[in-house]
Image 1 (tube, rainbow, N blue to C red):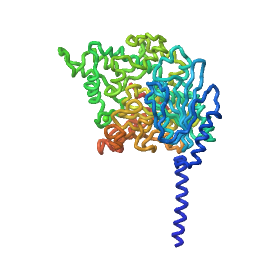
Image 2: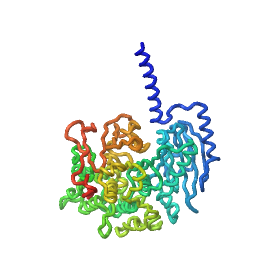
Image 3: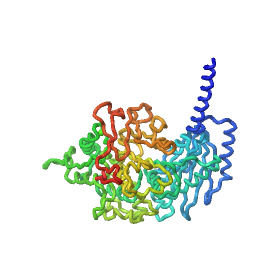
Image 4: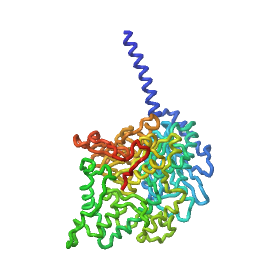
Length: 565
Ligand code: CA
């Protein structure tokens, strides 16, 4: 009897501890009482009158109930659906901030009522004029007070940059930096206290924006999640514009067709490089080991009009596509497209024989000429964008010491099938950090970890285990650190458990809609490389092992050798 009562009390105490722990881990994830809802609504609406910021006009402050569909009025058509369904109870706040006599940005915040105490600033994509409402909703649902901006202009196009340095400055860094500062003030005003941890999340342009904040270290972020970053931005833009003159127009004689890229060339790439990781599954784990040329595809002399081989000119074009961009003096400017990407994204982005849309940066900012001829872009001009480098947009500074000193952590990822931003710019940046800071990987690991995600395209999509939890569109099966890079970063920042790998999930039919996991793969942190161990089910992540490349310089102060060709 005594023992039973003792057990009973122990059980009550354990239950209490467990509830407290759950509350601290998940925030206040319990239904609100009627009174609390009324108070939240009142507090949210009052911000329209009480919350003040310089040069800012509040447009909206309203409570939005879980399940409500919001109509996003005046959304630029390039920014996606004009409606979004909100999946948690939030206070939505929006305003316009003026940054110059003809520049400014629009700000949006989704403040969840069930708040975990965390704050996140989101970046943008492409030419950066779209608020990512899906990611605002997704991060708010995960308990973050989330903010994002239109980055100083509406729509995913570059015309607003034309002769407007204010808009360029907002895009280079100012909108993100100011919105993070503003968002922190807003959090204090709405919740009555500061966020306990601040994060940044972005991919593509958003990845660059994250690294810009890490490099400049003007705003305190405890954790930065930066994917497929548009770093070395000026050279990236020149690189993007360089393909049309290389491939020629899609109406030119001998143009390499979609079917040739995705057929004989992609097959040849896989024949030579798929098995380098120990297992032929159509996915290249480490493109840096793949030194591809199309020389073997040359048609035998005397053969004409064949589609199963390439002419001499076509072989030269393919080999140029797989070579780094160099200046006319031969300096290495930007990495090649990594082999494998030709089968998916690159073929519909850069190898189409038409003008690449984001070349508009060249047109409106670099050459300042609306009639600029994209077909005539010449290697002599590859360095022109970098010479201009408006507002330090290059984002390729290898010194992260101020960020490190502030105690921040960076989780960086890049998909190996990325066909928009070369996946090899990311190891190039990692090597730059290593050389600049004179740190070997085991030291960089303390504050900055980079992961190569095989089978992943640009920020998502791809043929392999690419669902890593980096965005609403790319969530894994759970929001646990084992399935989500965002939560792996949170665990690193808040519990000091650094990720040695990140787990990606592949769903049956490649779609999360099926809900059925096909397999998972552990993506290694750079410079480790994922290798199948020759036995066991290849769909079992434990049949693979992260192997350290010989000669990289681990433990010797700084790299003695770059893995880049
Ligand atoms: Ca493989």
